[in-house]
Each structure stands twice: as structure tokens, then as C-alpha cells.
Image (tube, rainbow, N blue to C red; front, side, top):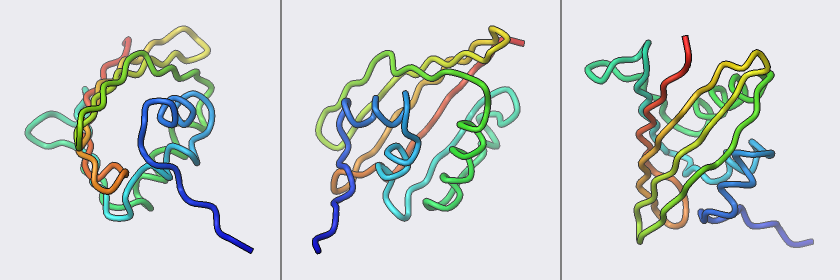
Length: 120
């Protein structure tokens, strides 16, 4: 029996992951990926930094366990760089907007800087 290859980064796969399948999204990250998060809690001088797929998985588990929708608005891929905008909305109407800049390596996300803001 053969093995199924993990998805390689492209806008279509990113959309599928963000909008409906967090396992697909997680598969887009390299094993040693790093994610830096900047928001109201984690300021630019002290961003939250996640190392590796296990820590990224825990973040995605938390996010996708919430009663909210996720939508990929825009995505640009050029060589080993990509950027995307994601809009989210909680069931109570609270909105979140996130912008990400990515560095890709071998078709996977190696580094991500995520800047997010939400209604308060």
C-alpha cells in the first residue's frame, strides 16, 4: 500500500485548510516551522513565538474549537514567499482580521508572521 503525500502550499490548499479542514492547514507547515504572532496581547517587542508543528497544532486546535467562521480573503504566492488575509467571525458577531507573511521551503510553511486584530 502506498502513502499519501502531504499537500504542498498553494492558495487553493490554503483556502481548503483555513475554511474547513485544519488538518490540511497543519500539513502545510514544515516540521520545524516557526510562527510569530503579534496582536493586542503579544506586542511587536515580545511576540508570541511557536516552534514546530506540535505547538502550531495546539494553536490551531484552540482556534478551530471556537464557534466561529474562517474565510481566506486574499492570497499571493511568489516564489518562496506568500502573503494572505483571513477574516473570521465569532457567533456573537465579533470579527477578527489577520494578515500573514510566509516564507516557504520545499512547498511548506517554514516561517510565518501573523498580525491580527479583533473587535473589543
